[in-house]
Image 1: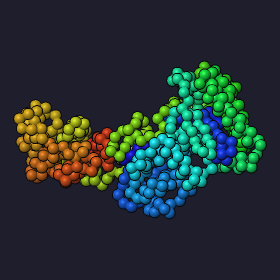
Image 2 (image 1 turned 180 degrees about the horizontal axis):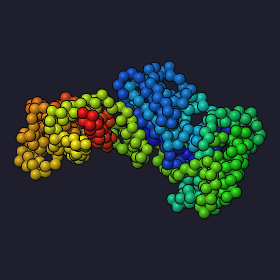
Image 3 (image 1 turned 45 degrees about the horizontal axis):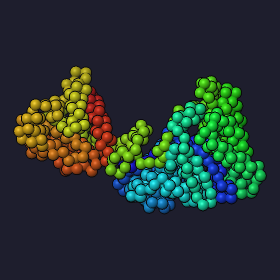
Image 4 (image 1 turned 45 degrees about the vertical axis):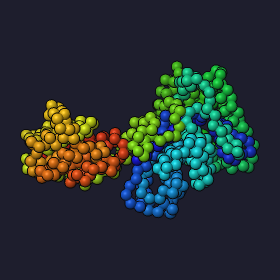
Length: 527
């Protein structure tokens, strides 16, 4: 499994000057910062020749037999195009999830493209730097898919942080804005974001702006010149000036931006903005191309409570956020190692991806095996090392106690991990690989159940105990991960978590403990 995440961006000034129709003849400039709201891509290998794409945001799941024939105009066009670019045409599942809704004006499509460039690139062994990620994401969106959009989103998302981006026909330059952490914190304290509840089609708005620019519409061109000047002035103020001037410049820039197209604003947006200004805001704007999405407000901290109360009363939802500096990055690599700070959403998305591939029929077979052992009054022995030892003890506790409801007795479940004196005696006198088999020597009878838990499936003491269990005529179950290791061939039923990350493997093992206990308890209650 590979997990990649890319942040969305919040632009302050210069938006619209990053379209080729403007910057190629005039040069463009944008001041922006990335925030801690991310788009996640989770890639897993799956058996078979198909491609599976799943989007939580659009509630879509597609199974594609022939990627070359796939539709590149729907909501999943970017992942399809990225897979084609890297030549991945079968045997993978991509699961996609965003922290924010589509059509938000925060550059989500750019985050989608950069996240996928990182994720699919890592899968095929292409380790791209931030500039290469941005360039590939831009190529996919603008050239391959022909979207009439700008270039700020991909470069902001890939690089991360507070940046001044300039655009010319010769390329894009990303220059970090050199301000202190206290200055950045001061800027953040003056910002508020509210979701208007309305999404918008940025491509349609930007296409109109592009056509007006190409036709040398004087009103649109002058407005673009003005917002570009605003971006330069904002950078100067951030580097040394009155921070409140940023708010006033945002207000001026918003007035110019509304000249780009009649679709940039609407009566609802105007009402929200006027409400904020009446209650003390110094400025603001609709993020992105306009028409909906998020409303950015700049206000002194002491004014923000009133503004929040008034806007939420009109149905807007305030978004809590902070700045971030990581940009697009691999969170979990192919070897199951966390490569960057994992967010709760990213971790849970990875867990959901693992759980979605579990074999429900095998879980039912293991439940049947445990139920049969109970009915036959057989013993259950469970073992493991480290975290798996804790899971083994927990499993025995649940089988012995949790199933014992309404007068039903529990299992005769024995954790081979809990008798410390006996374990250390076998380990010290014979060898650590005998700490479990040594205990089974005196206790195990034909038909008993022996469950071994080993994340990698290679624990010598678990394998030796399983060999004894088979020799004694016991039933054997293994819980493992990766490809199953040697445990896969040492038991009659091996439950393999489809992951190479020990945290996910151990989480699923514990989930399986609770699931099996619940299933068996309900069945015994029915009996």
